[in-house]
Image (cartoon, rainbow, N blue to C red):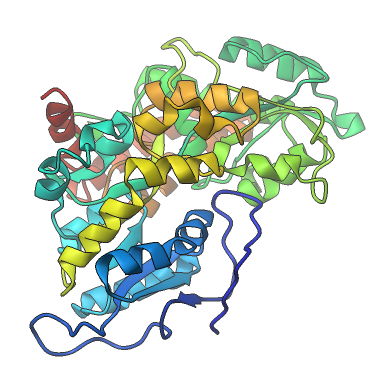
Length: 445
């Protein structure tokens, strides 16, 4: 079904319209183009994207871009499942009817690179002084590199936020303070919880990552499993104890969709999740805490405060595109300093340092949220999950000790079993990419 919307509503940065596809500027996504050579001037530049607030915002400016390049643009907005399935079918068939691709750099880029589906952008982004690739935040910029090649450009970034009830408590500065206060405020007889958060085996891994880093741990160390090390076990035990003793019943079944409403309905003192969802707590239709919610940076652990700062969505160019020049012009335009500032001022957090340094781009966010986002954009870790080909399988392994901790079971034995399983997984070349070391070398140039 094709739907055109001039004024899409937004409850979150990443809100996806379930069950529908949107086509802008042309016909619905069709079969593969045939033949070689340059397409005719009438052929559209085809963009495939998630139905996301960034895509909805950029499409309003497409006439400006079409006039600039003298070519029509066809932008198809799909649900996440539709997008993944379309990439799998079309790119496996070397289809030429995709030019620009919206991708999740942390979930898909390594696999897409392995399959040869993404064009190398290194010379374009690094060879264009006016584009200023160095202006992109370091952590998201590093995540754009796989095997020494820049394969995507970040368009939306995301960090964790400590959502808290400012009418009840002050924002804790440390994880010790968070634990103490959450345990003190928990009152299950009144159906009130000190802390709510994701506890589902795979889904909890991304939010747990900031706890892991702040305890001094890592998913992998020099290509080997890090989840059996003392720092990781301590992070598992902490997170498990927090939800077991201060959280709601059934926490091991909770992903974002189950945890968020508990805080939104005023039934929890603290909640750690992505800054992308903050508007849910300000919407009186679904929230009772719009006047009492506070926003704070992730609390410091033994290794300091080490939250993630990731590119949640990026743009790449299909390796099979016959309009690569025009595709690059779109990337360059859509991720230019001017466009990033414009969209960030409208509430979409981008990836350019110049935008984060401009107070005008943060004016639409609550002041305490803006301060939290700005601080963590500078210091955050560019990874909230293991950097492997089979991300889903890796998350499932890593999540086992989380579940054990939440259920009040001894974490150590389960963590050691998971560590051995993850080590075997890595040894089978499902593996860790070279991009971290490579991109770190780039950033020191």
